[in-house]
Each structure stands twice: as C-alpha cells, then as structure tokens.
Length: 388
Ligand code: ADP
Image (cartoon, rainbow, N blue to C red; front, side):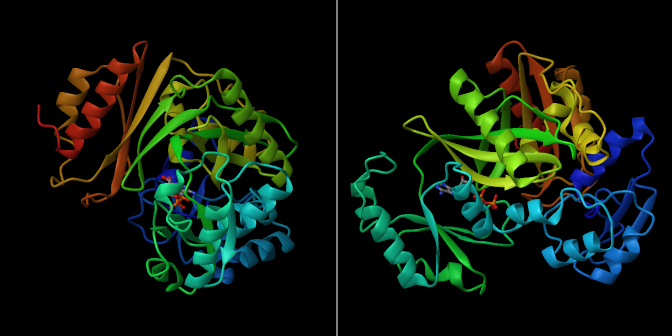
C-alpha cells in the first residue's frame, strides 16, 4: 500500500486474519501505518524510481490517498504491475475537473459547475447560474446577489476542506487562483445534509453496497457519521446506492469507492466528490457491518469474493476524535470503556495536535439518540472537551 496514514494502518489490520503480507511505502517511520507494518519502505510517493523499487515483489498495489501522480501510476501499469484502482479510474478522484466532466457524460447528477479561468470568469459563472430561473430551488435569489455565493475548488490537491472557497464576490474569488492550479466553480448547493454511498467493486465486476450514511462536518472536517442515514427516503437511498454502483462500474473502480453526496432541500441527490480508497464515512463498518470497508477493500484488490456489507446493528455511530489540549489519550480509556461497554476505540498512533484527526470511536444500539450521545460523549471525553 502506498501511503502510511491511518487508512493504511486499518487496511493492514484487515489483512492480518487472511495472512496477507503487507508492504508499505511511507513518508516517515512515524506515520500511523509505518508504526505497525513490518515491511516499510521510506520514500517519496511522487518519485517514479522509488515507486518502481517499492513495487518490485508486490502482487498488487493499492493506496491510502489519491496523491500519487497519474503519470507515475501509468508508468507502473506499463511495467505490468497490477495497480488497483487503476490510473484510468483513480484520475477521477485526483482531479475534480475530470470527475465532473465524466459524471456529466454518464448522466450522474452534479451541482452546476464549470472550470473558470480567473476571478472575472468566476463572476461570469455566478451570473450565469444566478441568471437562470433558479427553478430547481437551489438557493434563494435574494441571497445570491449577482449569482454569488459560489464555491470554488482547486481541481487537484484539496482535502478536508482545504482547497475549497466559499466566495461572495469577485474580490473574494482571488484567493482560489493563487495556488496556480486550475479552478472549478460550482453552484452553492442548498443541501439538507451530506450523505455517502459507499460501494466496493472487484476486478471481475462483483460489487457490494453499504447502507447510505449521513456524514456531518464541522469546520470542513468529518465529525459524525450515522449508519444508516436517519429518515432517508427508502427510494432515494436505493437510488444513491444504484448511482454509486453505476459510477464504480462506469469508471472501472477496483476497491472501495466513497461517493459523497448532497441531499438537497428539494429532495434530490447530487454528487459532491469521489474517493477511491477506504474512507472516513465507512469507518463505522469496522464494528457496525458484517464485513468492514477495509476487509472488503483488501478482498477487492486481491480479486477475492466480497463480504456481506449489511449492518450488524440497527444504528451505528462513528465520531472522529480530534486532538485537544491533552496529549494523553490513554488515561480517558478507563472512563470511556466503563461508561459504554459497546464502545470501540480506534486510535491511529499519531501525536496529538489540536484539531488533528487522531482516532475515532464507533458505538451501536437500537436507540439512535442514545447511540449518538454515547459516541459523542466518548469522542469529547477523549479529546478533553467533556470532563465527566
Ligand atoms: P474536500 O476535497 O476538501 O473534501 P469537498 O469538495 O468535499 O472538499 O468540500 C468540502 C465541504 O465543502 C463539503 O463537505 C461541503 O460541506 C462543502 N461544499 C463543497 N462543495 C459544495 C457545493 N457545491 N455546495 C455547497 N457546499 C459545498
């Protein structure tokens, strides 16, 4: 696996019962997965020679992030190394411009969008969408000015809300162009909530779909995931799963695909973005599904039959644990475990820094309010924002 973050750490964990020998290309020996994998190569994933040397002796290569340059992936494929997901699929998770163009081609619903050249062009885009009849009820006209607000995104290199700007004017649009990366403009979707439809697909085309989940963000970072999404219309949920399966198939995805969605206030679903690797919105599956996203990702990249994606409990809630003021995350285990015997703690071995994702908790049960309270309490207690 290329990339030594927590996703690699948990994918490695899922391979252990299968006796899979796991080799890691990591930036540093301190990275989350490098601490636990026995065969670690330290090197730069952007360097083709490093990737080639790492790939020697691997049966298959997969990733914990989407930042390996597309041309390096293509070179590895030309060397005959099975790269999963392959470059033709992965490019849609690397480049938001390519993703939007392809989703349009296959008729998958996106927010209105286009690549914009400069702040003036962003303002022109705002006028274009603001000038439309607003018939689909996306955003009340009085709040749009001359079409603003719009969302600007660098097509490459964003994560956790970095590389995303919410702009109200041409002047505010300038920031997005400073990085010198192409910029995609999108209408600001009036959404009820964010959902994720997660599926896993294997090379010979077997695929499974997890229940659609609700994902709540705080300051652009995923905070809570509820599985299944409460109150989701059954027909809409089914359509979201079908859409994710269709995207996986059309793009030839191998492994886990997270389709991040907006549920609009007028009851439609629009694709926000794609991730082709295990994803934060699927962490609940470790304790809440018959087969976790990590286990199914491993099976898919090895072209083994996939495992049952169905939930084990009526409700499962995942809360991310962010770093707080206290570096000690171990002492609070006593209280958290005693308070909730169903609680599962997953820590990533990272140094605690304020606001950094250092772990997550999962808990489950029949009463959603109770499950939510327990998960939030544990995450807050570990972080130090809740003290009793
Ligand atoms: P990242 O690559 O950082 O995950 P996203 O494209 O997922 O970036 O955007 C981060 C967050 O910004 C989303 O979770 C959502 O809350 C908000 N956002 C992104 N695009 C839009 C949009 N078109 N309309 C409204 N909100 C958006």
